Length: 402
Image (cartoon, rainbow, N blue to C red; front, side, top):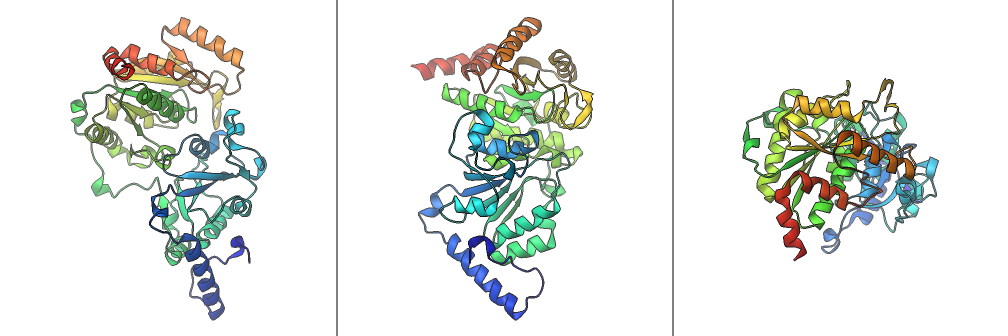
């Protein structure tokens, strides 16, 4: 019997044959999930499910995990439409030896043993699970895999999935499930005690690369001797392993500013950083999302890096809504909040390298601020952008160079 055909645990009272099947399934799962003391120290392995969406806007969670994951060792991506390709080539034209597989059976065939986690890597606009994906999740649970879910639909609330996970002793991690309301925090004004610079990476649209740019910027600053801490505000950053973050779009609006403020304060008090980078969500001008306003209100950033996609003609998932210009978004941000846009970063989708070069030159001339492409240009340009806005950080660069 293959690993994939092991029976999924039934959620109803089992018959004698079902009991035998359950025992067999439990024995297989126990065999593959036995952990020695040394193995407990390793990074957990994971397969990322992103059927039909990898490399697209709706696949942004999977895309992010392929580019950066501190919490999991990603073994493969499941997307039958791109099966056989290297995920790094699909995303960034660079091999990374993480294969794209046809289905779960193919992913298991590429693994030395059953992976520890099954991660849902899609981020569709409605945030909900498709019917057939529920069966696949039960299949993964039947193999003893923990499940990581970044959707708005909470798997732990599904009685059949909950029963199956309990029977197999595996975890269901609903990343967007907020704490009890009694534990949510209101705005307090404590943000005034955060004395280091705070920079928010906002955008002109959703799924435009804000988290990617924020991650690259944070890493580049640390590499240059500036202690930077990233505060994530969405499910992907939390799944990647961010130490500080909150899935802001799942928090009741009354508490959004407070949760944003408290998370930034936690990062400041826990790390004593030179600078805090805050991941943006949506766009302040976007009619469908309000998270940018809460980020600006709660974190009170001293500066903003704005991400824009010149090759995008309309907002993703909203074909009737045209993209704003960087100039209009900058004006809105600086009118809405006491902050300053310190630079523009380019998302190069639908653009050639020559078009990116031309856009950088034109926007620098028109806007009078530094412009770069975080993925195609040196990360040092991001560092220069921030240090130019906050000259006090230069001493950290000098100290690191000595």
